[in-house]
Image 1 (tube, helix red, strand yellow):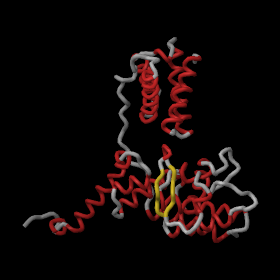
Image 2: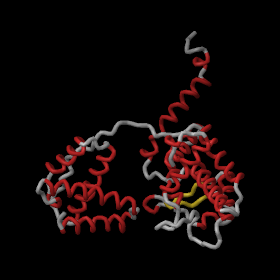
Image 3: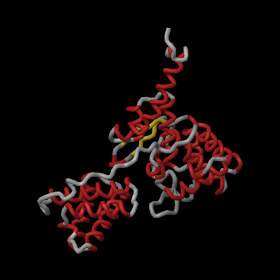
Length: 313
């Protein structure tokens, strides 16, 4: 990669960080996607900064030929679009080579979720592990932490990154609401269930006071708090104990379960958007299948013709 490309990439990522408050994970993903295109362009003997529409088209065709998922290809194209628009705004280029490139069509897919019965089994298994261990032992503190994590996740629908990076101050006082800083630094308030508040208080009260931390879920990691990989691993272990297929469960699946179960019990899509921290309602609309099913059940239960088996007079 050319020095000019690296310099432009760094400037672009700095802009995303400073002006859009992009998260570290987002910046890392953008860098990887831009590096992939730069390597492809260099292999074709092209300077990636001055590439044209034909290079973008060839890159996307290469991704398709390698059977790269449409979602991943679309993300790479999005990164390139934003990067080249940045170069145009900075006066480095006079045109955007991505402007005529269509995004890969992604197959419609419903989010993977869990039944209410499976979630109940997971929560009960976490509570059982707390009962079986002493709170003053390392195993007991781990059990309390896991119980707190799953209760909070299912009660609030937080993103895993939001959950593991909660500050210790989240446990201060008798709180009915949790203040969460989400994507782009946007803050939102989410209500806590009674079970989540109890699990939060129990975990916080049993934390090792000899190792003070600003995080609610401290760990000996680079960030100082529990990592998403460690939480995902422990969640799968908990699923085994609960008799739930661990391959079907992840922190993100529990977030989907929170959303799907809320809608199934009558929640409004706009309210769900606020709870999930979606900037656009279109993101929340992946759950409309739940609303459609609820409408069918409502008609079947209450419409007079439905009660007569659909026949007329």
